[in-house]
Image 1 (cartoon, rainbow, N blue to C red):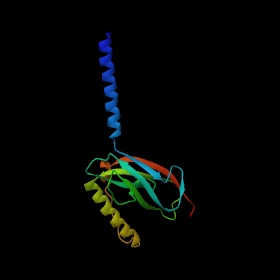
Image 2: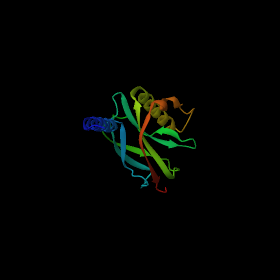
Image 3: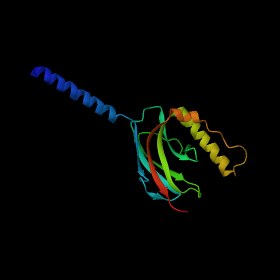
Image 4: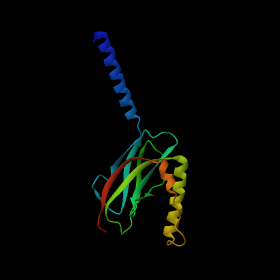
Length: 157
């Protein structure tokens, strides 16, 4: 191989590597600072973290898997992406052991529907669970993307 061909090959490989690194830097991501993995927390705590590179048209919602089927329960209202967040998270007195908190990016229109459902569910729950439980459309979750998650433990109540 000639020296000129080798230089061109090396330049192409370096350029491809830089392009790949640039793509990774632009990939949507989330980070949870609190609670930390494995940390033991109270049944009501403040989750803190940050999201980056979330595209326009998306909001962020915190979810936690609940129940035997790990239904993703939206435990926060929708909030703007690409900034730090601080959201209060509440658990039932009967909840115990390991729990998971997920940060998900959600298209704005779906986030509005999830937030409206959350408000309706909260009203139903605080009203003594009278009448039928508000229905959640699982298809809403198909357009969400998990950015990160953390597993933590609840203190004994």
